[in-house]
Length: 457
Image (tube, rainbow, N blue to C red; front, side, top):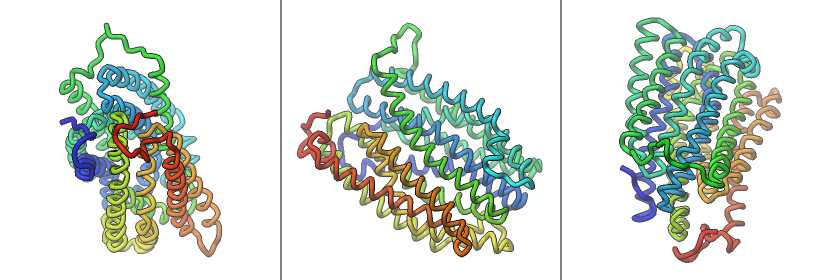
């Protein structure tokens, strides 16, 4: 099922490759959304606030591993585009060991630091035990999250975006069934929701690993093979850690804002817990298209298809603009029915705050859509540091403005919502300026080459 993205029609190739990724990550979002929905509807708003706060933390932790896997996936795509099978296998071996070691260290750290982390997030006393119980169980799924994201990145780097979707579909259905069983039937509360999520993560992680090793025997490691190569670990580390930094900075900024939101009390926490699930679900297609676009660019960059890259960039910005406007319209128009999925109608104050968040964020998805394209572009052309710069600008603006504006009594929590799109558009402006700067340099044929014959520097 692997697909080379270096030939054929550009727009249709990107869309066919991106659609399974979009569907797959939407299913992945169901893990915590189902927890939130069932807990919010059948356990209560305190439990909803506990699961919501946990979601922000777990998104941050997952982003560390996901960023490293995405960074390694870029190297895999470059090797695949170059048709360098030997170096691809060495890259897989090296990156697996590197990210596995980081996963073990991260998992141990969060277990030992669970209470300081909760104090940092300013978890209210009335939901402290609920949140701790949920997190302690959820942390056991971090290893499975690594396995899924590593092998999903590997398969996507060689053009196979369907198989990760299949395994996520299986685990998402399992997650829903186990949530209903553990929370509604067994009455295990937030602990039941966490157990359901961990079991589902293990199924998807172990399943995709076994499939990959059976389906692609050329990726298996043999003890008599030599995998050391000068510069390979450095390259893998550079891409993995730079993308990890980019992803984790983005989510660490959100984590800092979560602490600020928690200071406004349970009602705002519950509203944000529901609204941010809708928000994340809504812009997930934009993020996934950006990741698919990055793989397209990386494969063509490795194959020296520079004219194709230039046309792909133009096509991608048109597609993301259409996606963004459509999603914004849906979220803004259907903000109330979407909130009702998570919130009981009688919770009018929670409903009002959540809808306010969605109207402000939802109207501005064009900003984050373009930003995901810039992230993917600079990562694929061996400039992952620029993705980090854009993330710092976006999230730095968000955090600073959130704390400043929310401290003004006349603005309050609305200031937190307004800070988000402000950061998106400021980062977009910097990303576009840098893009035009690169186009003006003959050293970067990637963005300005008149033909496919240009040589990569």
